[in-house]
Length: 241
Image 1 (cartoon, rainbow, N blue to C red):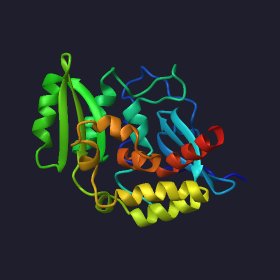
Image 2: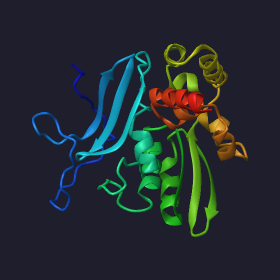
Image 3: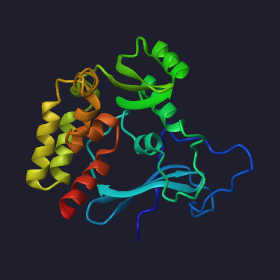
């Protein structure tokens, strides 16, 4: 018998609608209660199935290897979903209220320590308010005009070894990925140990281009994405590449 879905509580979970304008979706508990949050269940061959659900609507749904040692308050299954405006069914209701919703979410997540690095574009007045709030947060940013808006790339100054339990993550990657591939990702994580997202991917002139070329394990971790999802993508790329 398959394991039941287990809720993984996370304060990033978007609130459900407070009116009756939206009907709840089809994702329900056995007792009929509407699902809302990050849910996990064990699958064969040391895999874990993960779904993010908002008001009964699935926003992401993936399968990744079990990586039991690593955890971090900076990492969440919600981070890629809310930063990218994901939805499993483009026609279903979502929590994203306008075209700048995800940019605003990233900006706030950075301010409140919900992710260590991100890029966003906001109207100039909103960006200026964000700059004022960022003082004393340990964030470094670069910004430039993008028409009537401002593009920002920002990251924390804390080194990776203080932000994350790298030994646990490295052990998990070695177990989750085949030998040579695992060692490539491990070497990338080790090389970042004494550096920070700000130093590597904010302060340099070609910050966004440089970040785009970073190895998957580093790129995912820097964005606060689940390493299990990153590992699954690495394996999928190996099979198709």
